[in-house]
Length: 239
Ligand code: HEC
Ligand code: HEC
Ligand code: HEC
Ligand code: HEC
Image (cartoon, rainbow, N blue to C red; front, side, top):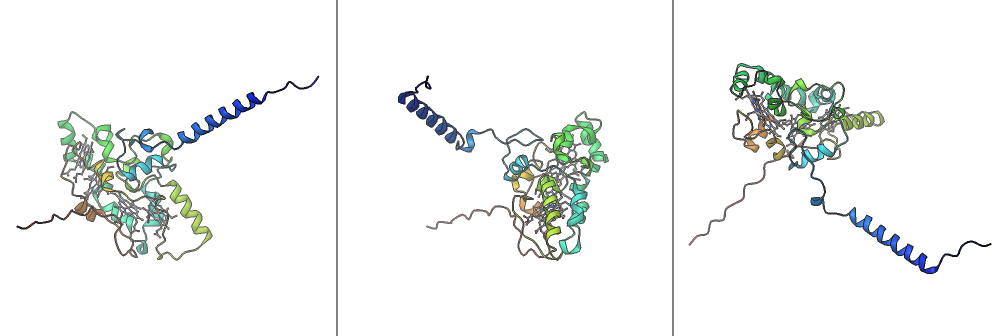
């Protein structure tokens, strides 16, 4: 008794089918980005228009909180970034909710405890609406609009920089270049995700002007990298 004979026709069909399946799976992987699920921002559930917010949503990092960033970014030679941040409104955005004005604004909207109300916290803290798994156990939301609201969840960046410092001792005053997606820089659309008309105390947001108030360049950095879009020149046609 021999093995059953497999006909050449059957082999031919099997190969043809396998080719079709392979072709389909390889073209599925090349679908244009628009037909894939849009990346949404956690706080609002809206489609993330900002490139920086998209990067945050896709990042595998978790939110660690501003005190973690302070250990490396609060040295004189690094521009005292933490101190600069802590003196401005973003670091005080919880206190402002329980200030006289905050309570009055909330009362008008029928909200008794604004510092606990999602209607206010969604723009007054970092990582509002994020899943628990994305928050480090020591992350404190009561520090307001922290570093990671603008630079994304930072756990991977911290891990990579700690590991790098062990391998090579770079003098502290040297400005190191790191990959752009490790700690992304914000764009105008990211600011507008909070600075918009949904805010009960909305003031017109001029990106260029506001940017100058919060900017914290490294002392060795010659030119800022985030700038407002250039205004288009209008050609004057004479005649
Ligand atoms: C272990 C030290 C360390 C910690 C902690 C740390 N950083 Fe950094 N970070 C660096 C170094 C080194 C650079 C490279 C620039 C430099 O030399 O200052 C950098 C650069 C950056 C940049 C600039 C990225 C670019 O494209 O140039 C951002 C933004 C940043 N860090 C944000 C953060 C935030 C937010 C946190 C807290 C979640 C944080 N860092 C914590 C060491 C650290
Ligand atoms: C997560 C929400 C959020 C994001 C993102 C955000 N802001 Fe704000 N911003 C606030 C809140 C809330 C306040 C008011 C805080 C207060 O009054 O204490 C504020 C206040 C400010 C102020 C006034 C600060 C002061 O001390 O007078 C400036 C300037 C500002 N933001 C600029 C920006 C810029 C530029 C960006 C983008 C690069 C940005 N913000 C992104 C929520 C945000
Ligand atoms: C859509 C985002 C957003 C929401 C929601 C929001 N805020 Fe704000 N809030 C902001 C921003 C941004 C600022 C900074 C305003 C500016 O400088 O343009 C701010 C500033 C403030 C200020 C300071 C205003 C001043 O002129 O000193 C108070 C008070 C305040 N918010 C209270 C509240 C209360 C109370 C709630 C909830 C009922 C709330 N906010 C909900 C974004 C928001
Ligand atoms: C409201 C948004 C916002 C917040 C909050 C914020 N940053 Fe930034 N950060 C920016 C912007 C915008 C730039 C880009 C500046 C430029 O080059 O024009 C920047 C740049 C940086 C850089 C690079 C500086 C350089 O020139 O190389 C570092 C490092 C950094 N931020 C760290 C931090 C840390 C640490 C905190 C918290 C203590 C923080 N940032 C909070 C918006 C923010």
